Length: 284
Picture: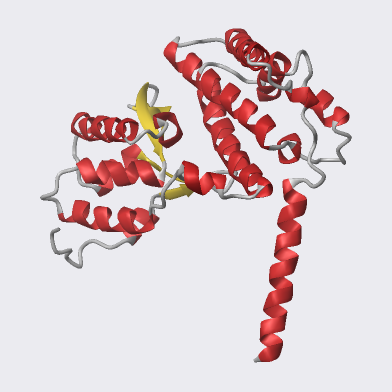
């Protein structure tokens, strides 16, 4: 790896990092292009395509790491033009710098920066099996949260304005007509509790499958229009439900609600950690 000069620092990558409403970090490809000193987008797009191929070959879901977005840029006082951009995960950035021009000093820095801080995005089957039931819920909830975030981006690009109705279309298909509010009431949740935080592992997995299949169909069929997108979400939900029925599985609405929500478990964990911390401070 090339020696890094003092002209380049890790702050170059930190300064263009963004944080979404869920606390997830991401980078814009157009901003990363400038930092990596690629003058033309067409040349950088070749690097992105190679990185996406690497992601797919590594058995990761490309859509979770390379989220396509469209931006409008000013060409003059009145003229505007739509350009392609991507929201990139840290892992996507890591793959990009691995496929970028190694002769650039800043690329060498990027390889070090993203390699050190990139964590493995998935766990092995053996590791998953060793998790407790609640840990599996936390893991599946995290994947569902990430999946919903990407799905909303794709749905928005397809023309969806009312996200609540769009999400309800998927729930109706999977839950035989139930909306998110219906699920909330059936589970007898308290005010402002999240239904996904009150699902067991199997119910979360069913919803994650619905989310991922909807994302792929919206993109694959280039679905446009709010009603069309809602119909796709509903039909995918129905097909996931039918698949569960065909193999003799338990319907999502019949799955038991865990005694404690994930928020409740998080609070208990934090309280225990604070208690242990105070105990250690007392010993000192």
